[in-house]
Image (cartoon, rainbow, N blue to C red; front, side, top):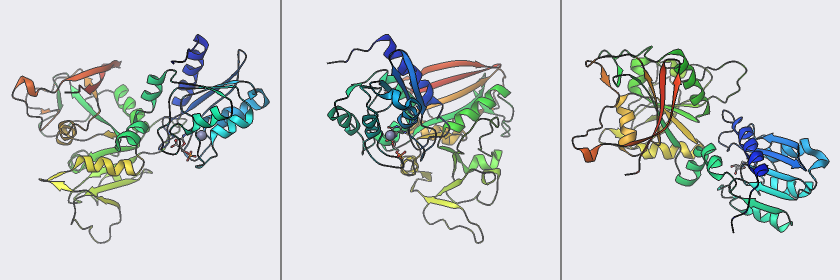
Length: 365
Ligand code: AOF
Ligand code: ZN
Protein backbone atom coordinates (compact mmCIF):
# COMPACT_ATOMS: atom_id res chain seq x y z
CA UNK A 1 0.00 0.00 0.00
CA UNK A 2 1.31 3.46 -0.90
CA UNK A 3 1.89 5.52 2.19
CA UNK A 4 -0.02 8.77 2.45
CA UNK A 5 2.02 11.91 2.75
CA UNK A 6 0.75 15.22 4.04
CA UNK A 7 1.51 18.72 2.82
CA UNK A 8 3.87 19.12 5.80
CA UNK A 9 5.68 15.95 4.76
CA UNK A 10 6.25 17.43 1.29
CA UNK A 11 7.37 20.75 2.69
CA UNK A 12 9.89 19.15 5.05
CA UNK A 13 11.26 16.79 2.39
CA UNK A 14 11.68 19.76 0.05
CA UNK A 15 13.70 21.42 2.78
CA UNK A 16 15.81 18.28 3.23
CA UNK A 17 16.48 18.12 -0.52
CA UNK A 18 17.62 21.77 -0.54
CA UNK A 19 19.98 21.02 2.35
CA UNK A 20 21.38 17.96 0.58
CA UNK A 21 22.21 20.08 -2.49
CA UNK A 22 24.61 22.14 -0.44
CA UNK A 23 27.00 19.18 -0.57
CA UNK A 24 27.07 19.10 -4.38
CA UNK A 25 30.71 20.19 -4.69
CA UNK A 26 32.10 18.28 -1.73
CA UNK A 27 30.48 14.92 -0.86
CA UNK A 28 31.87 12.78 -3.69
CA UNK A 29 32.17 9.84 -3.95
CA UNK A 30 29.39 9.82 -1.35
CA UNK A 31 25.85 10.82 -2.23
CA UNK A 32 24.36 14.16 -1.20
CA UNK A 33 22.01 13.67 1.75
CA UNK A 34 19.88 16.13 3.71
CA UNK A 35 17.90 15.64 6.91
CA UNK A 36 15.25 17.63 8.81
CA UNK A 37 13.89 16.66 12.25
CA UNK A 38 10.42 17.91 13.19
CA UNK A 39 8.78 17.81 16.61
CA UNK A 40 5.17 18.96 16.67
CA UNK A 41 5.23 21.81 14.19
CA UNK A 42 8.76 22.92 14.92
CA UNK A 43 11.99 22.09 13.09
CA UNK A 44 14.35 21.01 15.87
CA UNK A 45 17.32 19.81 13.85
CA UNK A 46 18.81 20.02 10.37
CA UNK A 47 21.88 18.60 8.72
CA UNK A 48 23.46 17.63 5.44
CA UNK A 49 26.37 15.45 4.51
CA UNK A 50 29.24 17.81 3.79
CA UNK A 51 32.29 15.73 2.97
CA UNK A 52 33.14 12.09 2.49
CA UNK A 53 34.58 10.82 5.75
CA UNK A 54 32.67 13.36 7.83
CA UNK A 55 29.33 13.17 9.65
CA UNK A 56 26.21 11.90 7.94
CA UNK A 57 23.17 14.14 7.57
CA UNK A 58 21.09 12.35 10.23
CA UNK A 59 23.84 12.46 12.84
CA UNK A 60 24.36 16.20 12.36
CA UNK A 61 20.61 16.83 12.56
CA UNK A 62 20.33 14.66 15.70
CA UNK A 63 23.14 16.63 17.31
CA UNK A 64 21.23 19.85 16.79
CA UNK A 65 17.94 18.36 17.99
CA UNK A 66 19.42 16.84 21.16
CA UNK A 67 16.69 15.54 23.54
CA UNK A 68 13.98 17.05 21.35
CA UNK A 69 14.54 14.20 18.87
CA UNK A 70 12.55 11.89 21.15
CA UNK A 71 9.18 11.21 19.54
CA UNK A 72 10.07 13.36 16.51
CA UNK A 73 9.64 12.77 12.78
CA UNK A 74 12.81 12.57 10.69
CA UNK A 75 12.83 13.52 7.00
CA UNK A 76 15.82 12.22 5.11
CA UNK A 77 16.55 12.20 1.37
CA UNK A 78 18.24 8.77 1.43
CA UNK A 79 17.72 5.62 3.47
CA UNK A 80 19.64 5.87 6.76
CA UNK A 81 22.72 3.68 6.63
CA UNK A 82 22.99 0.37 8.45
CA UNK A 83 26.74 -0.11 8.11
CA UNK A 84 29.81 1.23 9.82
CA UNK A 85 31.95 3.06 7.28
CA UNK A 86 33.80 6.24 8.16
CA UNK A 87 30.92 6.88 10.59
CA UNK A 88 28.57 4.68 12.59
CA UNK A 89 25.18 3.44 11.35
CA UNK A 90 22.65 6.28 11.22
CA UNK A 91 19.80 3.79 11.77
CA UNK A 92 21.26 2.99 15.22
CA UNK A 93 21.67 6.68 16.05
CA UNK A 94 18.02 7.33 15.17
CA UNK A 95 16.89 4.40 17.30
CA UNK A 96 19.02 5.54 20.24
CA UNK A 97 17.55 9.05 19.98
CA UNK A 98 14.03 7.63 20.28
CA UNK A 99 12.51 9.10 17.11
CA UNK A 100 8.98 7.88 16.24
CA UNK A 101 8.79 8.16 12.48
CA UNK A 102 11.29 8.21 9.62
CA UNK A 103 10.27 9.47 6.17
CA UNK A 104 12.85 8.70 3.48
CA UNK A 105 12.78 9.74 -0.18
CA UNK A 106 14.51 6.62 -1.48
CA UNK A 107 16.37 3.43 -0.73
CA UNK A 108 20.18 3.53 -0.72
CA UNK A 109 21.44 1.03 -3.33
CA UNK A 110 24.84 0.88 -1.59
CA UNK A 111 25.30 -2.90 -1.14
CA UNK A 112 25.82 -2.71 2.63
CA UNK A 113 22.60 -0.70 3.08
CA UNK A 114 20.01 -1.54 0.37
CA UNK A 115 16.98 -1.88 2.63
CA UNK A 116 18.86 -2.95 5.77
CA UNK A 117 18.57 0.56 7.24
CA UNK A 118 14.77 0.56 6.90
CA UNK A 119 14.56 -2.95 8.29
CA UNK A 120 16.56 -2.06 11.35
CA UNK A 121 14.36 0.97 12.07
CA UNK A 122 11.16 -1.06 11.66
CA UNK A 123 12.48 -3.81 13.94
CA UNK A 124 12.99 -1.15 16.61
CA UNK A 125 9.32 -0.16 16.29
CA UNK A 126 9.86 3.05 14.35
CA UNK A 127 7.28 3.91 11.68
CA UNK A 128 9.05 4.08 8.31
CA UNK A 129 7.63 5.64 5.13
CA UNK A 130 9.56 5.40 1.86
CA UNK A 131 9.29 7.09 -1.51
CA UNK A 132 8.29 10.69 -0.72
CA UNK A 133 9.59 12.89 -3.60
CA UNK A 134 11.66 9.98 -4.83
CA UNK A 135 12.08 11.42 -8.36
CA UNK A 136 13.68 14.56 -6.99
CA UNK A 137 15.94 12.54 -4.69
CA UNK A 138 17.03 10.35 -7.60
CA UNK A 139 17.74 13.38 -9.78
CA UNK A 140 19.89 14.85 -7.02
CA UNK A 141 22.15 11.80 -6.92
CA UNK A 142 22.02 10.83 -10.59
CA UNK A 143 25.77 10.27 -10.67
CA UNK A 144 25.97 8.17 -7.51
CA UNK A 145 23.04 6.04 -8.72
CA UNK A 146 24.64 5.63 -12.14
CA UNK A 147 27.91 4.44 -10.65
CA UNK A 148 26.24 1.92 -8.34
CA UNK A 149 23.51 0.82 -10.76
CA UNK A 150 25.28 0.82 -14.13
CA UNK A 151 28.90 0.57 -13.10
CA UNK A 152 29.70 3.80 -14.91
CA UNK A 153 29.48 7.50 -14.12
CA UNK A 154 26.79 9.85 -15.42
CA UNK A 155 28.34 11.47 -18.50
CA UNK A 156 27.69 15.09 -19.36
CA UNK A 157 29.19 16.40 -22.60
CA UNK A 158 29.74 20.14 -22.50
CA UNK A 159 29.88 22.11 -25.74
CA UNK A 160 29.93 25.74 -26.77
CA UNK A 161 28.45 26.72 -30.11
CA UNK A 162 27.77 29.73 -32.26
CA UNK A 163 24.20 30.49 -33.33
CA UNK A 164 25.00 28.66 -36.58
CA UNK A 165 26.09 25.55 -34.74
CA UNK A 166 29.85 25.90 -35.14
CA UNK A 167 32.45 25.29 -32.47
CA UNK A 168 35.61 27.01 -33.74
CA UNK A 169 37.12 28.80 -36.71
CA UNK A 170 38.80 26.73 -39.39
CA UNK A 171 42.19 27.50 -37.80
CA UNK A 172 40.96 26.03 -34.51
CA UNK A 173 40.45 29.30 -32.67
CA UNK A 174 37.52 29.04 -30.30
CA UNK A 175 38.26 31.50 -27.49
CA UNK A 176 35.53 33.90 -26.38
CA UNK A 177 32.64 32.48 -28.34
CA UNK A 178 30.51 32.19 -25.22
CA UNK A 179 30.13 35.10 -22.81
CA UNK A 180 31.26 35.60 -19.19
CA UNK A 181 28.02 34.34 -17.62
CA UNK A 182 28.38 31.04 -19.49
CA UNK A 183 32.03 30.70 -18.58
CA UNK A 184 31.21 31.22 -14.93
CA UNK A 185 28.31 28.76 -15.12
CA UNK A 186 30.68 26.09 -16.47
CA UNK A 187 32.73 26.40 -13.28
CA UNK A 188 29.75 25.23 -11.20
CA UNK A 189 29.21 22.18 -13.40
CA UNK A 190 32.91 21.39 -13.16
CA UNK A 191 32.79 21.67 -9.37
CA UNK A 192 30.07 19.06 -9.09
CA UNK A 193 31.80 16.59 -11.44
CA UNK A 194 34.10 13.93 -10.05
CA UNK A 195 36.18 14.11 -13.22
CA UNK A 196 36.67 16.43 -16.17
CA UNK A 197 37.70 14.51 -19.24
CA UNK A 198 39.44 15.72 -22.37
CA UNK A 199 41.51 14.42 -25.27
CA UNK A 200 45.12 14.92 -26.28
CA UNK A 201 44.01 17.00 -29.26
CA UNK A 202 42.34 19.57 -27.00
CA UNK A 203 45.37 19.73 -24.72
CA UNK A 204 47.58 20.48 -27.74
CA UNK A 205 45.21 22.94 -29.42
CA UNK A 206 43.70 24.87 -26.48
CA UNK A 207 45.94 24.17 -23.50
CA UNK A 208 43.03 24.13 -21.03
CA UNK A 209 43.66 24.06 -17.28
CA UNK A 210 40.40 22.18 -16.49
CA UNK A 211 40.42 23.46 -12.93
CA UNK A 212 37.52 24.96 -11.00
CA UNK A 213 37.60 28.73 -10.56
CA UNK A 214 34.90 29.93 -8.21
CA UNK A 215 34.58 32.69 -5.62
CA UNK A 216 36.78 32.05 -2.60
CA UNK A 217 33.88 31.43 -0.23
CA UNK A 218 32.56 28.51 -2.29
CA UNK A 219 34.08 25.25 -1.04
CA UNK A 220 34.73 22.43 -3.52
CA UNK A 221 36.84 19.32 -3.87
CA UNK A 222 39.00 19.65 -7.03
CA UNK A 223 37.78 17.20 -9.67
CA UNK A 224 40.17 14.71 -11.23
CA UNK A 225 41.40 15.83 -14.63
CA UNK A 226 41.49 12.99 -17.14
CA UNK A 227 43.37 13.16 -20.44
CA UNK A 228 42.78 10.48 -23.08
CA UNK A 229 46.17 10.34 -24.70
CA UNK A 230 46.90 6.98 -26.42
CA UNK A 231 50.60 7.65 -27.05
CA UNK A 232 51.20 9.97 -24.08
CA UNK A 233 52.11 12.69 -26.57
CA UNK A 234 51.01 15.57 -24.32
CA UNK A 235 52.38 14.37 -21.02
CA UNK A 236 55.21 16.86 -20.67
CA UNK A 237 53.20 19.94 -21.42
CA UNK A 238 50.18 21.97 -20.65
CA UNK A 239 48.29 23.74 -17.92
CA UNK A 240 46.36 20.53 -17.36
CA UNK A 241 49.24 19.39 -15.14
CA UNK A 242 49.40 22.63 -13.17
CA UNK A 243 47.34 23.66 -10.16
CA UNK A 244 45.95 21.71 -7.20
CA UNK A 245 43.82 19.17 -9.01
CA UNK A 246 45.14 15.68 -9.77
CA UNK A 247 45.57 14.60 -13.41
CA UNK A 248 45.18 11.08 -14.74
CA UNK A 249 46.48 10.09 -18.18
CA UNK A 250 44.77 7.21 -19.91
CA UNK A 251 46.94 5.64 -22.57
CA UNK A 252 47.05 2.66 -24.93
CA UNK A 253 48.71 -0.62 -23.95
CA UNK A 254 52.45 -0.78 -24.78
CA UNK A 255 52.95 2.97 -24.52
CA UNK A 256 55.95 3.84 -22.42
CA UNK A 257 56.37 6.91 -20.28
CA UNK A 258 59.38 9.01 -21.30
CA UNK A 259 62.28 9.01 -18.85
CA UNK A 260 62.27 11.54 -16.06
CA UNK A 261 58.52 12.13 -16.15
CA UNK A 262 56.16 10.99 -13.43
CA UNK A 263 52.41 10.98 -13.81
CA UNK A 264 49.28 9.17 -12.73
CA UNK A 265 48.61 6.63 -15.50
CA UNK A 266 46.04 4.03 -16.45
CA UNK A 267 45.82 1.74 -19.47
CA UNK A 268 42.67 1.14 -21.51
CA UNK A 269 42.29 -1.04 -24.62
CA UNK A 270 42.17 0.64 -28.03
CA UNK A 271 40.00 -0.57 -30.92
CA UNK A 272 40.86 0.62 -34.44
CA UNK A 273 42.80 3.56 -33.14
CA UNK A 274 40.12 4.60 -30.64
CA UNK A 275 39.81 4.08 -26.94
CA UNK A 276 37.17 1.72 -25.69
CA UNK A 277 35.12 4.46 -24.00
CA UNK A 278 33.03 2.00 -22.01
CA UNK A 279 36.27 0.72 -20.48
CA UNK A 280 37.36 4.29 -19.74
CA UNK A 281 34.11 4.90 -17.87
CA UNK A 282 34.33 1.63 -15.97
CA UNK A 283 37.82 2.57 -14.84
CA UNK A 284 36.55 5.92 -13.59
CA UNK A 285 33.59 4.33 -11.77
CA UNK A 286 35.98 1.94 -10.06
CA UNK A 287 37.80 5.02 -8.80
CA UNK A 288 34.61 6.39 -7.27
CA UNK A 289 33.71 8.91 -9.98
CA UNK A 290 29.97 9.59 -10.01
CA UNK A 291 29.78 12.27 -12.71
CA UNK A 292 32.09 12.93 -15.65
CA UNK A 293 32.10 16.19 -17.53
CA UNK A 294 33.49 15.77 -21.04
CA UNK A 295 35.13 18.97 -22.26
CA UNK A 296 36.74 17.79 -25.45
CA UNK A 297 36.86 18.44 -29.16
CA UNK A 298 34.36 17.54 -31.85
CA UNK A 299 35.71 14.01 -32.37
CA UNK A 300 35.62 12.82 -28.77
CA UNK A 301 32.25 14.48 -28.13
CA UNK A 302 30.82 12.65 -31.14
CA UNK A 303 32.43 9.38 -30.05
CA UNK A 304 30.63 9.49 -26.68
CA UNK A 305 27.29 10.17 -28.38
CA UNK A 306 27.83 7.55 -31.06
CA UNK A 307 28.72 4.93 -28.45
CA UNK A 308 25.52 5.72 -26.54
CA UNK A 309 27.64 6.77 -23.57
CA UNK A 310 26.60 10.43 -23.33
CA UNK A 311 23.76 10.83 -20.85
CA UNK A 312 23.50 14.57 -21.26
CA UNK A 313 24.67 17.36 -23.54
CA UNK A 314 25.21 20.74 -21.92
CA UNK A 315 25.25 23.22 -24.78
CA UNK A 316 26.03 26.92 -24.56
CA UNK A 317 24.85 28.78 -27.64
CA UNK A 318 26.26 32.25 -28.22
CA UNK A 319 24.69 34.96 -30.42
CA UNK A 320 27.50 34.96 -32.96
CA UNK A 321 27.79 33.56 -36.47
CA UNK A 322 31.03 31.81 -37.35
CA UNK A 323 30.17 31.11 -40.97
CA UNK A 324 30.48 28.08 -43.18
CA UNK A 325 34.25 27.72 -43.03
CA UNK A 326 34.08 27.16 -39.27
CA UNK A 327 34.26 23.75 -37.63
CA UNK A 328 31.18 21.71 -36.78
CA UNK A 329 30.18 20.81 -33.22
CA UNK A 330 30.56 17.10 -33.86
CA UNK A 331 32.98 15.25 -36.03
CA UNK A 332 32.00 11.69 -36.77
CA UNK A 333 28.23 11.57 -36.44
CA UNK A 334 27.47 10.49 -39.95
CA UNK A 335 23.83 10.86 -40.80
CA UNK A 336 22.54 10.30 -44.33
CA UNK A 337 18.97 9.19 -43.74
CA UNK A 338 16.21 10.44 -41.50
CA UNK A 339 16.17 7.18 -39.58
CA UNK A 340 19.81 7.77 -38.55
CA UNK A 341 19.08 11.16 -37.04
CA UNK A 342 19.92 11.37 -33.35
CA UNK A 343 16.93 12.79 -31.55
CA UNK A 344 17.33 14.49 -28.25
CA UNK A 345 15.02 15.73 -25.58
CA UNK A 346 15.33 19.33 -24.33
CA UNK A 347 15.34 19.05 -20.56
CA UNK A 348 15.90 22.69 -19.72
CA UNK A 349 16.80 26.02 -21.30
CA UNK A 350 18.14 29.10 -19.63
CA UNK A 351 19.36 32.53 -20.60
CA UNK A 352 22.89 33.29 -19.37
CA UNK A 353 23.75 36.88 -20.21
CA UNK A 354 23.27 36.86 -23.97
CA UNK A 355 23.90 33.13 -24.35
CA UNK A 356 21.39 30.31 -24.18
CA UNK A 357 22.16 27.21 -22.15
CA UNK A 358 20.40 24.08 -23.35
CA UNK A 359 20.44 20.80 -21.46
CA UNK A 360 19.66 17.84 -23.70
CA UNK A 361 19.36 14.11 -23.26
CA UNK A 362 19.39 11.53 -26.03
CA UNK A 363 15.97 9.95 -26.57
CA UNK A 364 15.96 6.23 -26.10
CA UNK A 365 15.86 4.73 -29.62
C1 AOF B 1 23.30 8.20 5.38
N1 AOF B 1 23.42 9.52 5.59
O1 AOF B 1 24.36 11.48 5.19
C2 AOF B 1 25.12 9.65 3.94
C3 AOF B 1 24.95 8.25 3.68
O2 AOF B 1 32.11 6.14 4.50
P1 AOF B 1 30.82 6.55 5.10
O3 AOF B 1 30.61 6.07 6.50
O4 AOF B 1 30.55 8.03 4.99
O5 AOF B 1 29.67 5.83 4.26
C4 AOF B 1 29.41 6.17 2.94
C5 AOF B 1 28.13 5.48 2.53
O6 AOF B 1 27.08 5.88 3.41
C6 AOF B 1 27.64 5.92 1.14
O7 AOF B 1 28.13 5.11 0.12
C7 AOF B 1 26.13 5.77 1.28
O8 AOF B 1 25.73 4.43 1.16
C8 AOF B 1 25.91 6.20 2.70
N2 AOF B 1 25.71 7.65 2.74
N3 AOF B 1 24.02 7.59 4.40
O9 AOF B 1 22.54 7.54 6.07
C9 AOF B 1 24.29 10.27 4.93
N4 AOF B 1 26.05 10.37 3.28
ZN1 ZN C 1 24.61 7.19 7.75
